[in-house]
Image 1 (tube, rainbow, N blue to C red):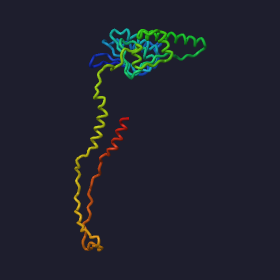
Image 2 (cartoon, rainbow, N blue to C red):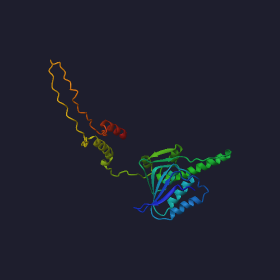
Image 3 (spheres, rainbow, N blue to C red):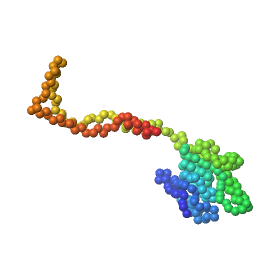
Image 4 (cartoon, rainbow, N blue to C red):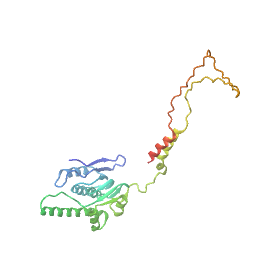
Length: 269
């Protein structure tokens, strides 16, 4: 058995936190008495409100149905938070919350149940009949939460409908978009780019030059030669010229401004 759920407790509020990530069970709960029993025991061994966080593409419809029932039957309040995705069977579990909040970047997806079947035409017909009844059960959960007409929900499932956060609230699948209405700090929204800009520009400012430059010997003063004078005076051979001393200048490791601005443009995109 692979557990797709985890329990914790919020240290600040004391609320029990149920997290469901990934597929809803990698094996069907149809005919399984052990796994549902484990979930039920863990749910009921504690007390207090539960915050259920869902991020799942769906999975076994029978597991989803049992979890839905257990959460609805729980002795305290259950509030659901759709972290990023509640699709297929996971959307059924989401309907168990007294309140359902969805991330502004989250999605909810509803579609028809499906299954693998093998056999003759009679076997195929039995599979179809089963899927039709399972669909009716799923519609029950959606209808109780949204209040939408059953035929409208059925058409949405036939079309495999994806709902954004605002659309999910509009149709009643969710009650609120997370963080909506909370005050935003306008300064913090522009801080990131300003911080990068200030950091880069500060590197472009000339710094105090602390390098030590070796003194070079003064050049010999040259006597100006009149234009009509053609005689060239050579330095006597017996007079040694002072050797030229090259200044030891450390390499300049400062970055050119244009290069920094180019990097900033790359970061901002």
